Image 1 (tube, rainbow, N blue to C red):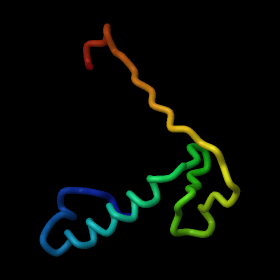
Image 2 (image 1 turned 180 degrees about the horizontal axis):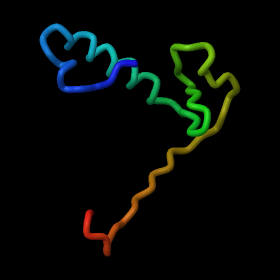
Image 3 (image 1 turned 90 degrees about the vertical axis):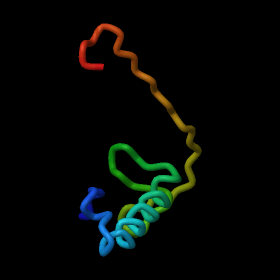
Length: 70
């Protein structure tokens, strides 16, 4: 699996890194099942959500008022 690291952004690896980011963006733009990892827009037939689903974006913001490491 490709890992996004700074060393991949060298002159030889930059096009490959940009391709990785473009594919990741396309897969993550639709709904992704948090438990199975299946996606509405997937490159793999095995990881594709096939049925029509109604979804909403859920954004959670966590506060850490009394924690020293925030």
